[in-house]
Image (cartoon, rainbow, N blue to C red; front, top):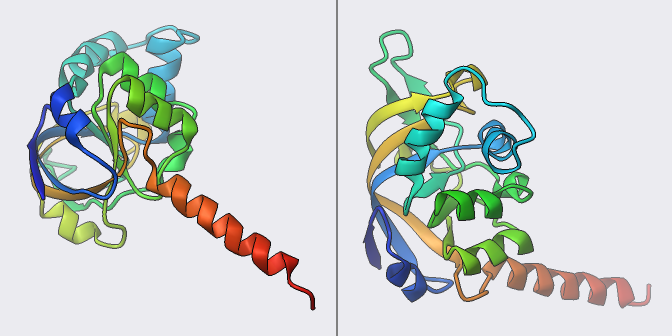
Length: 208
């Protein structure tokens, strides 16, 4: 078990390989579809002009994400009225939806860890090699357990996206994940896809 503190150095990232269990402690940021699309369009491809507090939030995210992690998570949060926020449920959401964006976000913000479930594709795998970074598989179906690893909600950005899609800044302790895509081109998801395809091809080739 690798016990890793955020932010993560390149040396630590390069030491990690597919299949290794990890616990994370430190500050990370949640982000899903709306957040990734906004980051790409406004600050990376610049097809959209910054509006409102966009530039201020960008400056904060540049500091928060540098060497840290993005968690694909749409949390259930209490304390919305009082702003005394607490995560009630914090399970991972399906990561492949961010495949068009993730590598570019990793490189631009120097994101070292991408956390979610279900894995990602070749563009993100290349991003893991180049940034460098890793994809970390979180436990699906354990939303309340994972929420207990969130020790503090430090803030939130872009609440206009809605609670699940906002960028929540959280402090975690011993957050459990497994490396399933590493910085050396290894992807457990690609291995499973290939083996599943072989089984399917074998089944389809059988005479009836």
